[in-house]
Amino acid sequence: NKLNFVDMSQSIAGADTKPSGPKSFARRDHLRSIESKIQKKWETIQVYESNIDESREKYLITFPYPYMNGRLHLGHAFSMTKAEFTARFQRLLGKNVLFPF
Image (cartoon, rainbow, N blue to C red; front, side, top):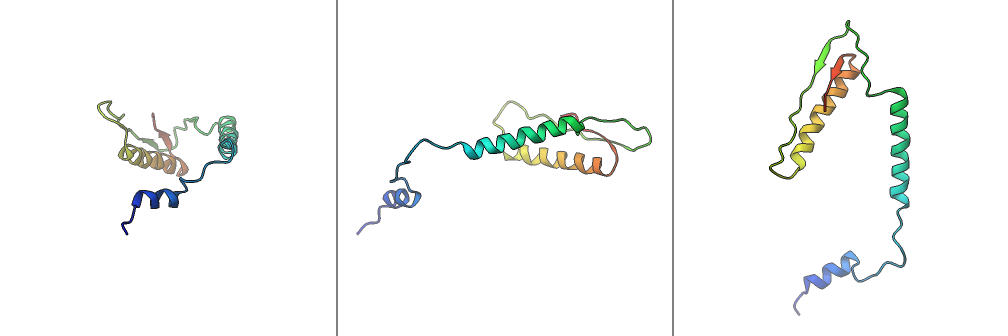
């Protein structure tokens, strides 16, 4: 008896069963509604607006834009995440943060 890995993987993944109806987008729609509510709240309270206070320390972060000679990859997201985290943390510390991205 030879093992047929293709048949086994299809049955494990449920490939032999067919969907019983149209695909539901309820979860996606719910998440999008939450996203739009939060974005409106951020706009109302001006989360991303800078109020310059000369008495506070300045903090500037630069981030190199990715070159167009290849596809975006996880390394780009990793580098961007570190810069964004630092900007938000420094803002929490009360500094005037400029993160022009």
